[in-house]
Image (cartoon, rainbow, N blue to C red; front, side, top):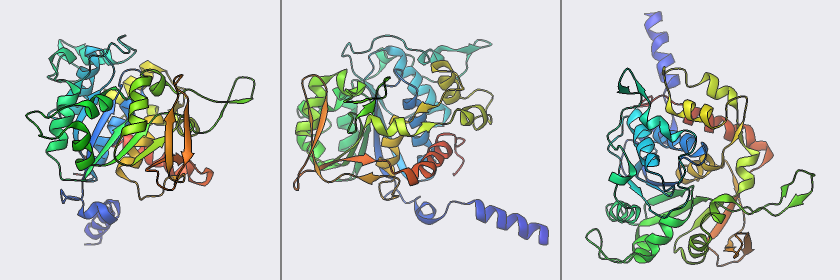
Length: 348
């Protein structure tokens, strides 16, 4: 009897507490759209793994993934990751912008075969077979409750700028601007820089961030016209919160092959602590009230013609940026590691 009681207590202690216990209610799961340039860096891949962990915990529901890297293997790899987590049905949309058309270092894992079989099974073989991102975005938004959707944009602003320009279609009688305003609660975006960055000589300098620079016209439109609140995770946040390589070597070993760990190693082999840029935007999108970060005062972000981002405080502004406090660093990194390495269906 004591043995059985001990086992019961262990199970109860291991069970998620607080909101997670009641998060099976679909009304409590945040409808999430993940807009990503997956394939250009590996933080997108870790962020996608985090989303699946948060969905398994009942905290979010991945409504769609849209991709801003214009390479056909990016969509195939995304489908392989989703299928690894048991969710190969999630809609995937692509853009055909001509931006970053190279194959990158790891999305070729989608075609990796062992004994003639795909190492990571999936049925979307190429982005050429995927629908356009705007159509996927409009369909996903139209299906959700008003004011409920969070979008984590961790790539270029191409897809969301095109969404704003979109016209009524079979999915919604609203324009893109009106559809966003009606359905979206929050845009959590990894883009820009809001602190000066130390250079090689140690001197501080302004930083023109990659996601902005790769499609400046789209970033300018998004910053100026997006009709709902935006929280920006600047370049400085991910730099401050580097993912410990020991986790890659240790925490994903529950599977003989793991797409997140293999992608990380192919991108930049350990011992290398990769910045967690995209993970931070996902974390805030799903858990905005967990106080992982401080927030700036309200204001407005402006994107210059050369891609430099500036923030102007304003009492009527609907945009803020994340601030990483030193005392929260270990707590945030622990959350990022535990979520990204969580086994598929672990909390189901």
